[in-house]
Length: 401
Ligand SMILES: Cc1cc2nc3c(=O)[nH]c(=O)nc-3n(C[C@H](O)[C@H](O)[C@H](O)COP(=O)(O)OP(=O)(O)OC[C@H]3O[C@@H](n4cnc5c(N)ncnc54)[C@H](O)[C@@H]3O)c2cc1C
Image 1 (cartoon, rainbow, N blue to C red):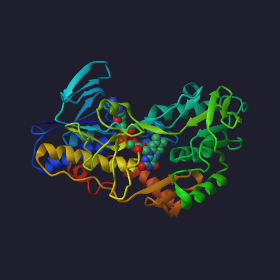
Image 2 (cartoon, protein in one colour):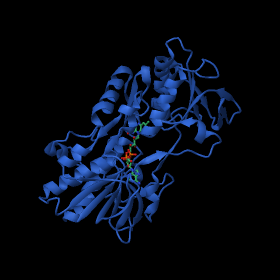
Image 3 (cartoon, protein in one colour):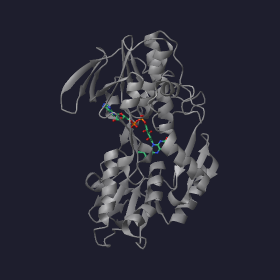
Image 4 (tube, helix red, strand yellow):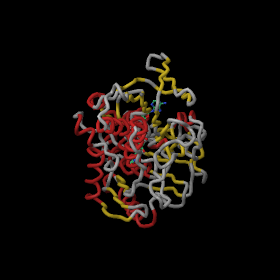
């Protein structure tokens, strides 16, 4: 029997760990149940940190931990899935095509930035979405130091005032000063379509964010969209033109395209609708998880967000349940009561909220310590020690905040 997992992100990593954990608990061997993870690289890209400097350091190896738990790594990118035949075709780094069969498949292909068809965006826009995007932005920012301090060189426009846009923008004043010199007249401007910054954060948390933006001198343009980009800068829907050499696009993500291969219902983000066991209804043998799935967290109408916090725990449930079906064990319905947000606010500290209503629990330096702990410890893969790695993937305990 073979369980295939597509994707080496937070969800894929925990799907592999928890499937291997259940196999171990049930006394089955890798000959009884083969578990394999398919991804272009055997590396976890620590996406929640990609707004930071030195993005090239923000990955963690996975091969050693996969080896320790007897999960095979298969290099390749999944191109097509034949759900009738229970096979999928992958393309390897060398361009070779291979067909893999599965008994259960976990789709953990995550998400990617959605770039709308705005004139100039493809040519002139940067982002912090993927490792390559973040490295390109970082190289560009360093390259600014060699250009004349004119034509908006010291200005960065961040399009999107949600979580990612705020974290990118609040880190930029210090990052730009480090690159351009302490006396540089840096400007960072967030452009947000909604009439308030951080539309998802609610009334209680918003004043803390607004306060941080004021302290850092980050400007906002609210109720305005990006109309076009060109060499000279960005033009907003209000008609305002901002001279800049750097526009960071942080306005919206979508599930990775592989979800379209599965003949099932998807939401507006391209996420596969799943049942409480994270199974894709009506398509035999397929589970979806992490940013690739839309799952209920509870019976109160809360749905998992495209977040690392949800992806990690959803991964653990999907891996467990896919393995459970093959091992004749009961499945466990996914549930996630605790929900927190921890928003980095650069030199103004951070903001920690709890619950779907986002009650503010910590601000400033104390919240920043928690953010650093999350970003440097909690979200990294477990050590490559078999027993400890397997124990870390008990679905009931993963991301239990
Ligand atoms: C700048 C930034 C800041 C963020 N901050 C936070 C935060 O503070 N808190 C939080 O909870 N979340 C945050 N997030 C969101 C978080 O990073 C994502 O929700 C999380 O990465 C989702 O995990 P995942 O495993 O579902 O997908 P991903 O991490 O996207 O991983 C997907 C994996 O699938 C692989 N893959 C995709 N397609 C294929 C294919 N066809 N074949 C094979 N492999 C494939 C990819 O290579 C990758 O390995 C942030 C994201 C960004 C970009």
